[in-house]
Image 1 (cartoon, rainbow, N blue to C red):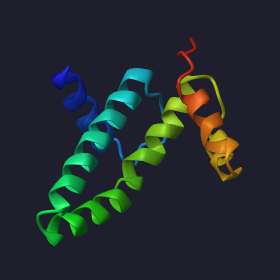
Image 2: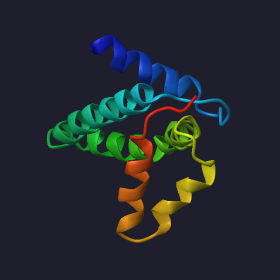
Image 3: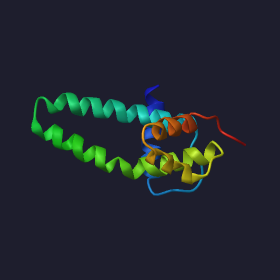
Length: 108
C-alpha cells in the first residue's frame, strides 16, 4: 500500500503540467489519500508551531498545480470531456457530481 501511495504521489507531481493522456482511478485516489495524510500531519503539527501552519497553507495552494491536470486526465480516462471540471462551479451539487465522474471506471 505504501509503495502505491508514493508512486502515485511522485507520478502526479512529475506530470504536473501534463494535460494529455490518462490517469487511472488508482493514480487519482492514491494521490488523494497521500494529500489527506500530509494535510492532516501538517494540521496536527501546526498546533506545535506556527511554521507548520504556514507550511500547510503554502502546500494547499501549491497543490493546485498537480491536482488540476490529474483530474483532467482522470476525466479523460473515464471517457468524459475535460470541460466537466467546471461542474464544480455549480453550488452544492457540482462537487458531488465531479466525484461521481472521478470514480467511474476507465473506458477503452
